Image (cartoon, rainbow, N blue to C red; front, top):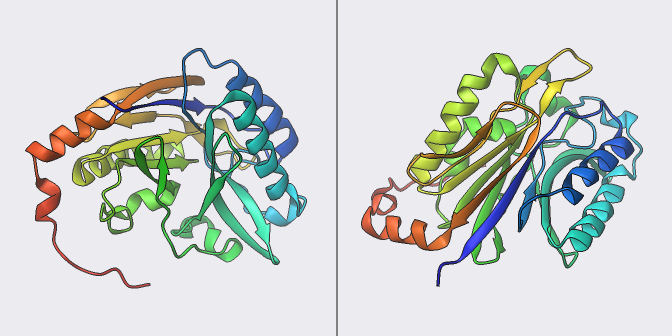
Length: 258
């Protein structure tokens, strides 16, 4: 039996540092899904935009958004994935949450904070990767700048899907396109990238380019406008390809130190 996973990518503009409005706008997009969907992927910091001022956000906004994700996931029978600015024990995190329809959730704190804008001075860096087992697929979710570091994404857990949420600006979008495809090919996994679109209050422009690439680097979906994209992943296809092309078995062996 062919196991499939239906994915919806919400490529959207974001209201600057306005969690309540962003939740309302995104919920409308989720409720308007036009195709059968198992997992909905949202951009990085989907409630605020890529803010370097998390202290301006109410301290309980992180938990409020997780509760909202649980409610929307249950009501629409979909899993939700996206990152938020999250405050915990007086520390700030760029935290990705994967929320299932039954309310269970997992989280990943961004490992590679974006040095160019001082993200590491504001947000704590994560130390552990996350692998989510969902509907027969092993999913490894990462965040934006993580894309530039192939060792962190290296497929040592036999995951099926590598997933990035981002606020990736227009001047460096060629790197986004190229690296998403490279991560798919080198890890023999589906690679999903969801970027925001529009401008933020700092004047940065985001061109979208959300996409899904298969395990050989073929483009399944791609867009540079505000819209929801749909695609279906096949567990059978990836297993057959890996069985025929045993490239992952020839990986170099080394250990990643903190």
